Length: 131
Figure 1 (spheres, rainbow, N blue to C red):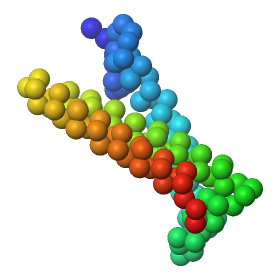
Figure 2 (cartoon, one colour; figure 1 turned 90 degrees about the vertical axis):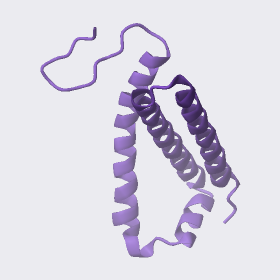
Figure 3 (cartoon, rainbow, N blue to C red; figure 1 turned 120 degrees about the vertical axis):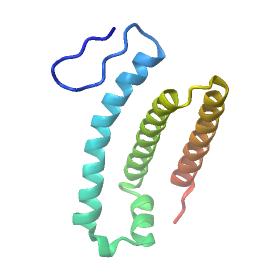
């Protein structure tokens, strides 16, 4: 049984393997995502301004020869980290709430199909966008 401290937090999985890596990923990606999202919100809300955000602003950001690759990379990393973090959390919820093994396998399969579709579609848009 995993030990708990006096503070409420999820216990670290014992052993090694996929579940341990998944548990660790959730903590690391959550911290990185928090920083990236704060930066993204500050940039979009205060530097650019909400009233100024248009298709042309985003297109210009991605097609700028000086920093376009940096913005595309930032957006792709944000997409991947957020999507994997969310899918992993959903996988945890499926484990908790779907007790029938067949339905759980079906739900996880559907979840991962959607995951791969969104990752491929997002990466395609980010890298093939011409403005």
